[in-house]
Length: 357
Ligand code: MRU
Image 1 (cartoon, rainbow, N blue to C red):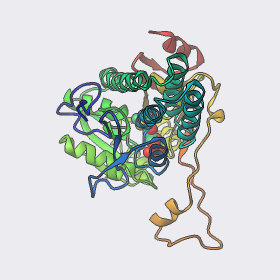
Image 2 (tube, helix red, strand yellow):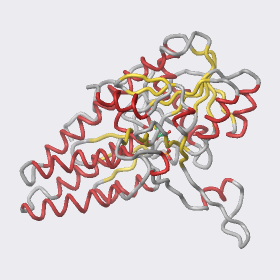
Image 3 (cartoon, rainbow, N blue to C red):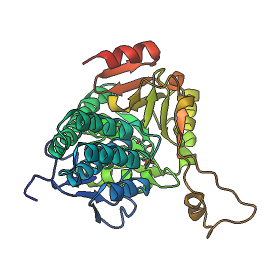
């Protein structure tokens, strides 16, 4: 111990929660499967425990799993500190593979791992502290990005705006503050919000369990609705903006995000509402041309069956469970990153945005 447990700066009144703590040797993970009923911290002591925590959703959200993966790799590197050059490289490669396989859709995980892997290859074998510094840097950069995106996104919202958000994109899903939830928090602090709707976000209930919990802790009132009620409230004129995060954004501006995002974008366009995606540049994957190329994670049927009150598989009952979908760029009114915001993103405007320093 002895090292500060927080990275990237202090929390403020509108940012009260952290998903992870790093103490210089182990990664503490706020177990998001238990929230809000129970606040319990898991301790991951190596890369494989970290990979399991990511796969099993103890930590989730694109930037947060990127950071967890980074510290998982730092722990692997620390254990390899006295290996020879060959053992160091082989051990790093194995840990990167293990961690990267834990969840496929959010590019933040693969991106963070590859950033650290390059440092491990270029530096002196055994220099695990260089990886720790890099992971700390990712943490600070993500928090700074969220603060910047909060300001940029909030500027689009007129006073009295009614917002709907999906899944959880808050401090639990990031280094702190959040992406879409960072915009919502900032807009609340700037007195621009009349109402926030959170969808339940089945089957994991990130909205019902996590977004509601975070907003409540910050004293921000929230209306929790079942996923299928979104269009109902849109039709009644009770929503002005849908604001969501992203797990991967391809070169043409297509966005993978929590299952149900695509339906919200279609419904928003039908009702003439505006649709905003908020994500750091670490979520943009220019190597993929369009959304059809994004690997979409399917999780087990038991996640769907449990909420439907079914004890387990039945012979004539299937429960395919894609956990992300792709919203075409054409349905996105505003894309906010820390580098700036663009309206109606496409390949040209996104490339220009990503080229900014
Ligand atoms: O399955 P999850 O909970 O990891 O999915 C999370 C989302 O889809 C979020 O909207 C996305 O990661 C952005 S979080 C800032």
